[in-house]
Amino acid sequence: KYAEVDSILDLMDTKYIIEIQTNYGDFYYELYDEQIVLETETDKLPIQKNEEILMLYTCYNMTGADKTQYRYVVYAKKV
Image (cartoon, rainbow, N blue to C red; front, side, top):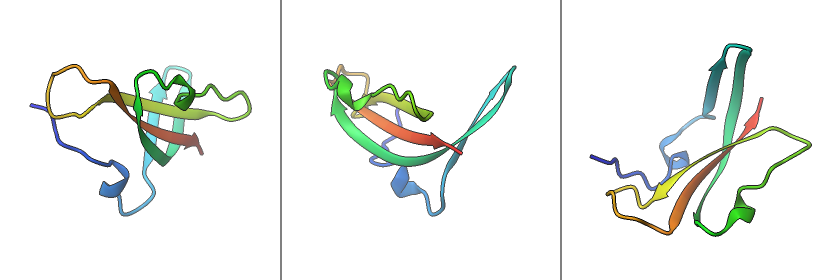
């Protein structure tokens, strides 16, 4: 069963930190934005050369397995 989440940022009272653990180090990112975009809006998933931004995305609406044209994107900056 899929969870219904309209906004990850709305669930947070404090700054939310994501920890990524790898064999070459641990990395921390602070969430700062979220968007619902069309699957064709690749400009909403920019590659940044001057700063590290973590982007996590999934299909949206997250209530079922039906194909959808929308993506829920969460953005986080390295801290």
